[in-house]
Image (cartoon, rainbow, N blue to C red; front, side, top):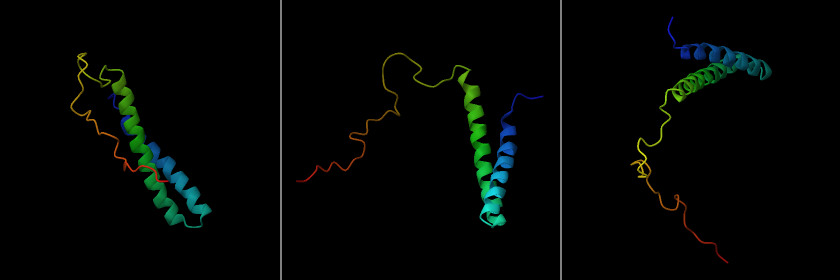
Length: 93
């Protein structure tokens, strides 16, 4: 059996989402809308669960990110954006 358990998150998320969607659809008296929302919520939960499982697996293998050297130099993606994109407008009186 493979060690890839990320595939189990999608069916679990879909099941939970459809259950939530049926409850919403019953409460709103629109079961079709509830099922559609449930499928959307469930797929989102499943994909989020797969991503969370993937990141937990990577945390233990020593690839936690960060700079590869201790030279103190900034990585190319660390670009100083100045004042953060504010409008720079001072207050008036």
